[in-house]
Length: 277
Image (cartoon, rainbow, N blue to C red; front, side, top):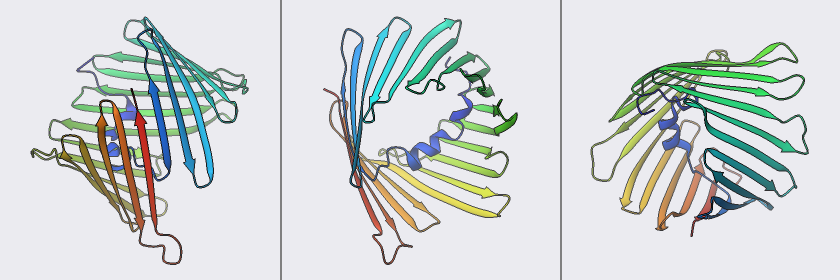
């Protein structure tokens, strides 16, 4: 629903996307092959240091049902079956891994004009329970999430946040890490032809009185190329250049410099290629 609030997990997401999304300091290749019959194939390979891992993902869509099966380098099989509108404004997803017989999980999402609710339960004798909810509208929303381990009868997480979204800015306040950290994020869309955007995130930890901040920007160099930059208080500076070199295909170059590393390599570079014929 267009006026409904975003899920709790999306609080602060706009700033996180500018600061962290698609930054990759390894070598990654993705090939996506769509099909008019509803069956799609995605192959992914990642080279990290001297280790190469990959997976093949098969996606089948029929009506309101989507079946997603992924097989990785170590012969692990992950399956997810999603049914949209199983009830009015309700989506359900069943996921499990093979050979892990305790990995089954059921996720249910419900969207109301003034609320978004997500729940998850593990399908095993001692399940993990998770529940998150956001109320409000697309402009202002307030939410919280909680996780509970039935085996130990203890809470694994409890977080809360509030978000303000306007056409030219977005701000979020998040109480995270079971109340141990306070995160504030802000993103501002500057009215310029190149779509210049600035974002910042500040984190304060109550137990250690530690403060961290990260700032970044994004702007278009030309109609097909986007440049992103990022700077953080730990002495790291990063950039990302992403270019659409053919329809639905991206090439992304990322780099990071760590000023605190004097006697070891202080520079990391990564290349990502995503093809969709």
